[in-house]
Image (cartoon, rainbow, N blue to C red):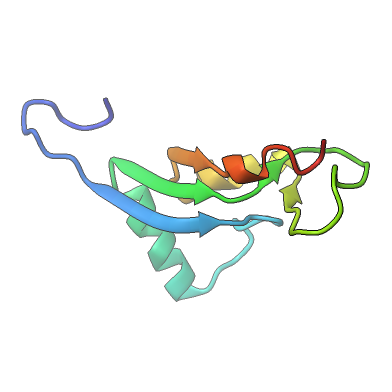
Length: 97
């Protein structure tokens, strides 16, 4: 585990749905970086990854609905942000066939 087992302390920062379609690490706004530091300083930084990370070039598998996707290289932005635990958007698992 990432925390000090002897102290028994574990800090968790949880966010909501994450939809990352571009780099986060280029932003320098103070309030944004304060939020990033909150995640980085926690033992567990958690978000729900509410999109698919893929490099598919074809159309979505079915008509209608919202189909979200992002380049897999953007996963590194989660690590940069201090996110080390995600749940995945299983309701979007068949969006692209």
